[in-house]
Image 1: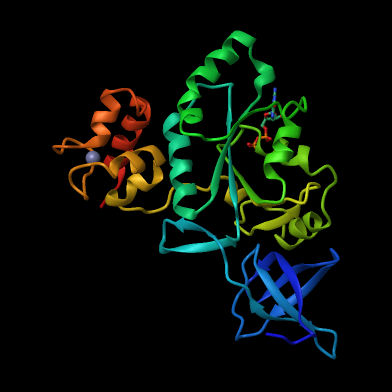
Image 2: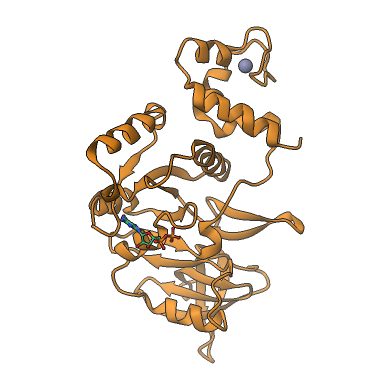
Length: 299
Ligand code: GDP
Ligand code: ZN
């Protein structure tokens, strides 16, 4: 499309046909998609024009690089929540023992959604240096598979600079269990309450925070954050047993050497993964996690 009247914007909140966009000069506008463009998602890059009556109309949604979907127990079709997310920040806290299985589930979700995973270990101010060393040692299995790990204290501003550099120029989501410090991290990187937040609490009517509606915020490092309480609890969606290895980069990679192409890495002859676990080249913990998640999948 070469129409000179068309301009670029990004959808910061979508209500289906209606949405809020942020224009190149950072103005927030109400807009409406044309039928031919379809419903927008938060994070969509769009083309828009201003009609004579000053209505803002979205004429085209540019191709999405990734889509964040969420499974609803009552509806087998995943609901699309947001688009063009580059990175998933998985937050854990040192105040309880590390839940490796949970981290692995987030990593699977990231792999299947096409998001780059980053792990943040928060609340390091609450433990002694020796205990922190033990945590670092335990987390080495993730460093070994080249996952970026960040140690933080959101309330003491420790590690915020590294966090800002890893989120720079990227569209990020923050996930993790309740209480690990996700809101505190978000507050630390979004110093002033963005204008959209007020609208959210009004439009969510009655100040309920259970909505899955996603909102896109600008981080002051040219990065973006897509957030909503629904997203933060985002979990694993339905994948098939046969595909599970794609969520474990090292198992997937080593699995290419297995004798059988459809090897499930249990006890098949010539399984390179089992051999790598025995040789200590794949972490036993990660392998056990693979087996346990494999068992939990239906098909
Ligand atoms: P969320 O449920 O993951 O969004 O967690 P919150 O951000 O609401 O934090 C839960 C509790 O942990 C709050 O009482 C925070 O003040 C506290 N908290 C968050 N980050 C830190 C941290 O780095 N250190 C300490 N000591 N407390 C923290
Ligand atoms: Zn195998």
